[in-house]
Image 1: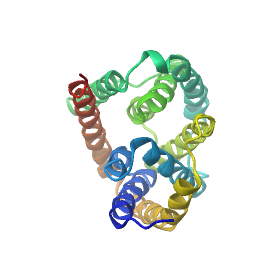
Image 2 (image 1 turned 90 degrees about the horizontal axis):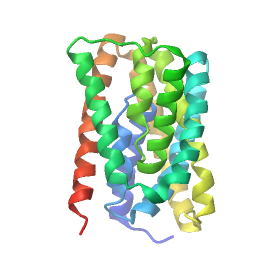
Image 3 (image 1 turned 90 degrees about the vertical axis):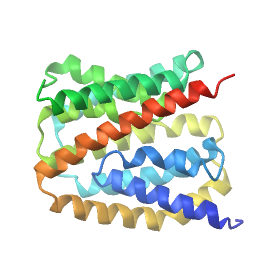
Length: 249
């Protein structure tokens, strides 16, 4: 395996961001793939990071194995699987720019409604299925499944650690399902897998530190931070979408 110092530096920062995100500091994971795409082609960046994310998802899911909400997952996971299948069926007719702008707008509206004091709890099975479907769909089309999932999960007023555990299991299933199209399209290579393997120790270390930190943060501060990160992620998605439109001939 050839050594590219710049690529490994950027990849190291990317997996640290993923570790923070998988450890409970939601939002940091959004920048990981675009960051690594500064050093290698975007599809290769996604192929390198997917095994790393899965390892981190497994670590987080195990760490929070007794702290998750069964009802939330029973609603959003079937929807997510349907959303992934729907995305595969419609991918050729859609563009990432439009999806990112729509998802970003949803996230901003959700965060603003919280900041201005409007609290609407998403009730019922239909709501969970809808937002799960949206998360699976946008996660597959534009790697942006976070905001739709958070719209539902954060409205359930779950205890901090239960919320993080639920999120960990959800994204473990979501990312594991993505293995199917990556293998089918031949995106994994010996080179990409060797890079992933080299990054794993740093990825797990970052995950471990983030989990230790998030357990020490008071719930009120954690949720304030979470809504702020949702806002930042949503703004970034809108900006990415507009930039992609601007880059089209």
